[in-house]
Structures are given as C-alpha cells and as structure tokens.
Length: 438
Ligand SMILES: Cc1ncc(COP(=O)(O)O)c(C=O)c1O
Image (cartoon, helix red, strand yellow):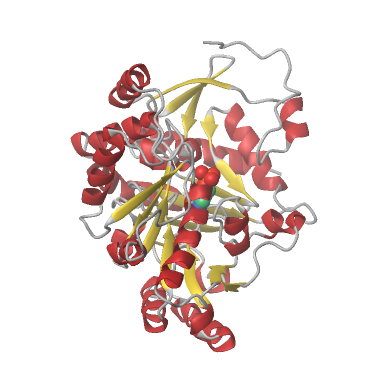
C-alpha cells in the first residue's frame, strides 16, 4: 500500500472539487479504521461525515473486509445479463427482508446516480406497460440532489449542477423546496411550517394534467443542499396526492437509507411508503460501489405481463457485482449483530443536544437535526457565498475532524457507531472553529 505522497497531483481531475485550491494544499487520506481516517502525515482525522454519508458501520469492519477478500478470490466477476451468481439472489432476498417485505424486488446499480436514472426509467416503462404511455413527465424539487446523470440533474434542483449542461431532460417540473428560516429556524426534528408546500403538486397536476406525469422524486431529507428536513405532514401529503393522481412516488434514500435516521429507511421513520426507493452508500458500508432500486411488487409485475423476452432493456455490466454483493451481505450482518440501529437510536438525543450547544456562536443562523444528521447554517460573507463554510472545512481538517460543507451549510453525518466522546470532540472542535472564523 502506498502511504506516501504521490509524485504529482496534476493528472487526476477531481470530482466536485476546487482542483486548483486542493492541489495547492492537498488533504490526503491513507487509511481508515473505526471512526477515524489517517492522513498522509500520520494525523488521526475524526470522521464526522461517514466518508460521504456512506460508512454507517464504521471503517474497516472486519466482517466486511473478510467477506470482500474472500469473494475476490472466489468469484472476481460474473455477468448478470442472462446469468447469475448466488450472492446476488441471496442479497436480494435479504434486502427485501430488511424492508419487512414491503418491497418485492431490487435492481442493482453501481451508484446513487445510476439508481436514480434506473428508477426514472422504470417509472416510464411501468406506465407504458399499463397502456399509459402518455405519462412521461417527472416532478422533482428545487434544491433536490439526485446525483449527476442526465435524469438526476434534470429532476434535481441545484442550479450549479444543471447550468453548464444544456437542455437536460424535457418535460420536468419542480416542486418548491421547503427551507424557510423565518418560520423554522432552530428546529429539532421536523419543522412545523410547510406541509402545505406539498399541495403545489396539485397546481403542477392542474397545469400538465395527471395523465402526463410518471413520477415524483424527492429526498425524504435533502442532504446535499444542506440538510433540509421535511415539514411535519409534508411527505404524507405528497403520498396522498401521488396516489390520488396515479403518479409513482420515488424516495431517493441514497443518504437516508441504511440507518441514517435510526430506522432502516427514512420511509420507516416518517411512516410513508413510496413506490420505489433509490439507495447506495450505506448499502455496502461504502466499501464497494453499489446502488439499488427497491420497487413495490406491482411496478415489477406490470412489466412481467409483456410477451416472453427481456422485460426491461436496462442494466449495467457491474449490476450485482460479486464483491459488492459480498460487501452488502456482510454489512447487513453487521447491522444485525452489532445492533447498529439500536446504538444510533440511543445516541440521537445526545447528538441533538450537542448540535444545539452551538446556538449563539458567531455566524450561526440555524441549527437543525434529525436522526444522526445535522445542518449548521452560517451567515455568508457578503459577496462570497460558500467561503465561510469552506474556511471552516479546511480549519476542521487541519484540526483533525472531517466535516462536509455545501454552500454556507455544514452538514454532519457521522458513522452510526460514533460514541459520546466522539460527539464531544466533534462539537468541541467545531465550537472553537466557529469562534475563530472571519
Ligand atoms: C440523495 C442522493 N441521491 C443521489 C446521489 C448520487 O449518488 P452517487 O454519488 O453514488 O452517484 C447522492 C449523493 O450524494 C445523494 O445524496
């Protein structure tokens, strides 16, 4: 393993990165275990973000490491087009059990972005199979993030992710976002104000007609635009309206799936059942890239009515990759054996108290939290949006904690195996950093 500095940083065009700034003062991670990374200088970095929301069980879980090692020696690759391997089927059954059998089928992808584009295509194929081929529109939401495929950026609502890329998918409309600091600042859990914003779907339906709309896709808790927690009753209302109009409801659970809310999925936490869920990240504890679309049986079954032959012309070479399946099977075992959800539940009040201990510190204009997620919104520096939070991110790394920032919002999502002392360290350091920031 190479733990030394690379000779050059020039060739790697880094994703979602200020490449020039990074390469002037790089942050290089060389190993990880438990809730810590180690950087190239040998410093321990407390992981306040579970990597990128994707390591709920902590780094280098021995069971997962062993399962991946074993599988790579046994079956390094196997196609899943007109073929199969046992682990892919075993995992699918286990995943259905993990949903309490409320979902009937799972389709494997390699990332959240692919899961989103897969779910959108399934929605189109479902309606077409049922003789409603006119249902081709998608409804996303402002400030939504659904990955970086053309489908995902079209239904997504982050301007910077859309602007350079032309006309995107046609026939997409957006619900308004629900973020309202005037009404909801400093709320623990779901804010009171804003359920009525779901009724905007009625306006969109009136404009386009339900017969043209295939699906609504939302993140139950939006992460990438800075931890936007749904108002009380909002998701239930969306569910009712989608059912009323025959529109499929897709929850993008790429960050909320696998325990982030202390329940298997955010759908469980909010007690709202979408027709499809897109997942990734925690699915393999971040070890091997994998995404998955969970679908209700009726979506899948509609496509099985077609004349014999391939039912869905869609898939990825690496769908159900053996290493990913092995990693995910082991991850589900760790969830059960170590009662990861129980641990997270036991921690969430302590977490929320720690988040709210930052109230009144310089620059803080909102604090919000749910499950083991927190958003700390900072006042922007005039004329330099994002600069203050980015400075906090760099200071935090230098101080030995990994946080994530988006715009001027600090988003925290630690491994679910955090302990109280890690929470104390994270928020102790953050408090100091906030006091030092310009
Ligand atoms: C809600 C949501 N959907 C989709 C994605 C895209 O996932 P990936 O980066 O694996 O393509 C993300 C990534 O952060 C996400 O947060």
